[in-house]
Length: 113
Image 1 (tube, rainbow, N blue to C red):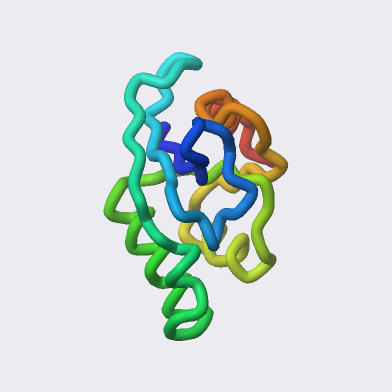
Image 2: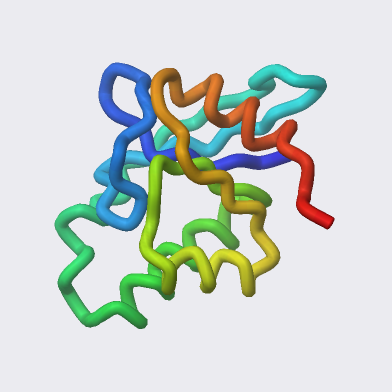
């Protein structure tokens, strides 16, 4: 499963999702991180440029381009969570600590229902 996590320079979960400066895209296989790539996305600086719809579209394009299937984050606003849900992505909130561990946890979380 491909999981996206906002990440700090020291490898922790960044408390911001929509305003993240940097995110990691992890391929999680058999309960471990098989690949890990970090991207300077600059969503912190871009957040207020162009309105909410443009910002959501920017994030959606990144997630689609990287074949993301799940997002692990500390928190996000209801409109963002709704958009990710409409995209069919698993959203796992409450992530803290090590970003790699958060990615593994998100990949192993059962889908409700």
